[in-house]
Image 1 (cartoon, one colour):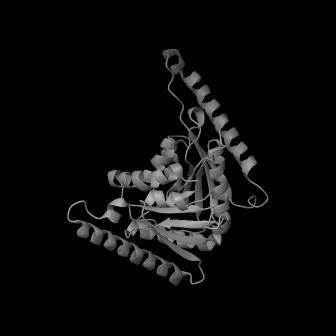
Image 2 (cartoon, helix red, strand yellow):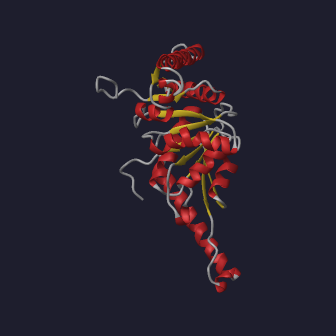
Image 3 (cartoon, helix red, strand yellow):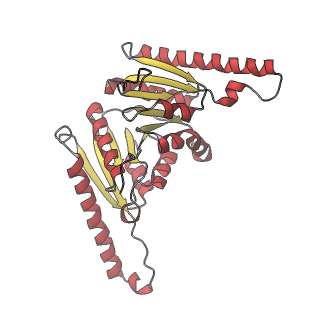
Length: 307
């Protein structure tokens, strides 16, 4: 909501911090706002350490350090807004410099109709640390979709959007988001459902025929899950889209990463079902976030959703 208490129009909210990863996120957010005909909100969180300056030195020195941080933040936001207006002069752009850290200000600004966009940098441990401090924290608590854009990502349009489904409410929301995004980007949608057959505990169950029966059972369940989710989610707006399904016995993270290589986006729920169809569990979404080389959209569960 805005300061008058009225619910504002849907907004794409992007966090910037001067890094090349944030620049990639800004570029993605600008195009998303144009495609969705929404406002763009560019935010920068100083964090209390920057606001207060360094702990060392006199009070005057700490005050000067804080002022420099604020001046730098304003300059950063001005440059980002100028870039957005240069690319799309008619875009509705606003900025916010906040005292909180980046995840806090992003969460404070977001409503359920918005979209948050953040950047991620590098691979392995470095990227995991950054995701832990921004991407994962934001996607865990956000009331709206969170898009994590890799530093090396190229903006793609009209290719394919890969979405993981497992029959949970969270994965149905992920599919709805993927379909809505495909409508405005002319992309095809690839629905992925994967499963792993647990190894039996007793030797007798290791027999080939018994294991084959288990594989057939999981395959039938996967087919039912995909058919059920598609029947529930596809409507008159989206039935004309190019939609295909990939069902595979494989690790959920690996199957999504393989299907999503070179895609416009991978879409996952922030949590899903465990057991038979654990495709969009928290561990899966985190695994995809840490390793994907394309933008990843994480759809948080609504408060009323229970599986």
